[in-house]
Image (cartoon, one colour):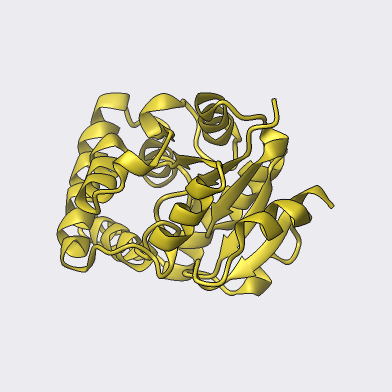
Length: 222
């Protein structure tokens, strides 16, 4: 199987929205008496599923049902905050058009719940551009586990070694590494220095405007 694929994390990658996610998490926890550092919170949680984050701060005794109620509240707060700013990351739409013209499969692999996937992809009219979508509802474990990337590749009909992941968070880049995939880092949220330890990173960019489809795959195979 030689089919090539680009697999995109959604938040912080397709959309430059992680500051809104962090703000909504901080507001959510502050209402419950938890005062958190924004940078530490992002580094430790980006890419994890909502129920994993909830259990970290509220304890392992939190039931699945209780976690689901809390997660729904938090994500509703996020969507309320971000809705007026919803927009694709600079160069993304043109980049995926070039990729599709080159015969590259396109997939989304995100820790986001279904409601947020709908909010983003349908809100931007991008769902039709993707051959496969995998989210929190499809896998039991969030990043840095590789499950969501492996599922996205399988659904797109590609092998891990022929897939390039686009990520903005260290936990996501680690998940790609465990999946046997190379990664392109977007510095929408963290500086390049945060990713210097990863040997699977083939490019670090601010946005999609200057990326070349064939050059990325050439670099990935070297």
